[in-house]
Amino acid sequence: MAIEFGKALTVTETPIPGLVVLDLPVHGDSRGWFKENWQREKMTASGIDLPDFGPVQNNISFNDAVGTTRGIHAEPWDKYVSVATGRIFGAWVDLREGPTFGAVYTTELDPSRAIFVPRGVGNSYQTLEPDTAYTYLVNDHWSPDATYTFLNLADETAAIEWPIPLDQVEISEKDKNHPRLSEVVPMPPKRILVTGANGQLGRALRAEFGDHPWMEFAGRDELDLTSPDLASARRWRDYSTIINAAAYTKVDLAETPEGRVDAWAANVTAVAALARIATANGITLVHVSSDYVFDGTKEGAYTENDPVSPLGVYGQTKAAGDAVVSVVPRHYIVRTSWVIGDGNNFVRTMASLAERGIDPKVVDDQIGRLTFTDDIARGIRHLLESTAAYGTYNLSSSGTASTWFDVATVVFTHRGHDGRRVSGVSTEEYFSAATGPVAPRPRNSMMATSALEATGFSPVRNDDGLRDYMETGLR
Image: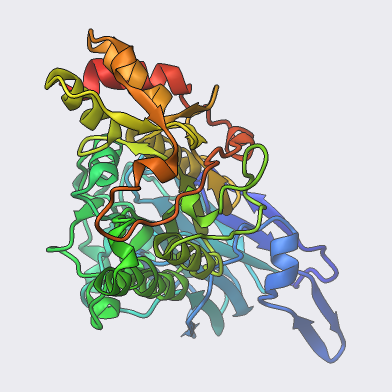
C-alpha cells in the first residue's frame, strides 16, 4: 500500500471522547519520504487540544510478521501513536467510567496517519504488512503502582472485525486470557485532591463534589503541605486537579513575628510546592485568594486585571501566592471576599450577640459583598467542568454592596431583634482599644464578577445569600 503524499494536517474526532485521528503531511520523492511526526505548535493550532500533553518517553514496537496482534490494554496515561513503516489495523475501546464505556473505534494507520489515545482508552494493533514498526509517545513512565485495565481481543460485545481472524495470528497467552467487557473494572477518572478539607470552604467543597473514590479530602493531619517530602507523598500523575482550600487566615496575628512566619509558610511556601507539583504533572491547580491583595482605594469594583497592592502581611502573602500560581500552565485563581460558611464567621457572631443581649459596635466604612462557601464551591466546580479559560476569576455574591454595619443590622432584624441595637463606627474607632497588632483592612472590597459570569456562572445575590444562610446555615 503506497503512502499518500501531500495531505494537509487534519484532525478527525471519533465516537470515543478524546480519541482523535490525525492525517499527517508526508513529503516524498524517489529517495523516500519525510514527515514531522509530532509538531506541537502546528498540531495545537490545527485544533488538537494537547497543549500540555508533555510526553516523557518515546517507545518503538517492531513486528516482522503480518498478523502480529497485541491485546487491548488501557493505561493510566495519554499516548500518541504513529507508524514509522508498514501498516496496522487498530482497535480502540473506551474502558473509562462513564456513558461511553465500551464504545469501539477501528481504523488503519500508515505513516501518514496517527492517533491520540487518552488515558483509560484500551488500544490494540494488528500488523497488515511485514516489518511494521510503530512509535508512541507517552506522558508518564511505567509504574507497578499504576492502574491498568484490559479487555479480551475476542470480546463479543466489542465485536471487533479483525482483518485477519484471531485464530490465525500470533497472540500472547496473557492477551488471550483477558476478561470480557462484562467483567472489566472500568478505569476510574483521575483523582481530585482538596486540601484544607476541614475548614469552612473544605466542608463546602465536600458537600458540592460528594464522596467518591476519585475525590480525596485532606486536612493538615492527612497531608502536610509544608513537608519537604510533599513531592513524593502521592503518585501525582494519578491526579487531575488540586483544589487548595488551605490557608493561613488570621489577619491580625499575621502582623506578629510568629504569625508572619506561619502566614508565609502556609500561603506562599506551601503554595509554591503545590505549584511545582502541578506544573510537573500536568495538574490543574485551583487556588483560593482574597480581596486583601488590593489596598481598597479604588473607586468602584476591582477587576481581575487591577494591579495588586496589599496593605498588610496577610494580603502580601496572598498576593505572593497568586503570583506563584499564575505561572502554572493549568490554573484557576479564585478571588473571594467576606467569606461566610460552616464555621466561625461574622454572621454567626452577630446572631450570637443578638441572642445574648449584647449591643455591638460595627464598622460602617468598609464596603463589599459577602461570599458564601457553598457558592465558592459551586463556582470552582463550574470552572472545572465547563473547562473555562485558565486564569483569575473574582467570585463573590452579586447585587448591592453593603457595609459590615449593614450586614449586622440585617442579622439582628432577621433574628427578631431591634436592628437599632447595632451602632456604626469607623474602622479607626473600632480598633482604638485593641491591645494587640491590627492589620490594615481594605476599605473597598467590591469585586466585579463579570468575567466569571461570562463563563455561564451566576453568583448568588448578596441579600438572597444572606437570607438563605440565616435560614439554613445558622441551625
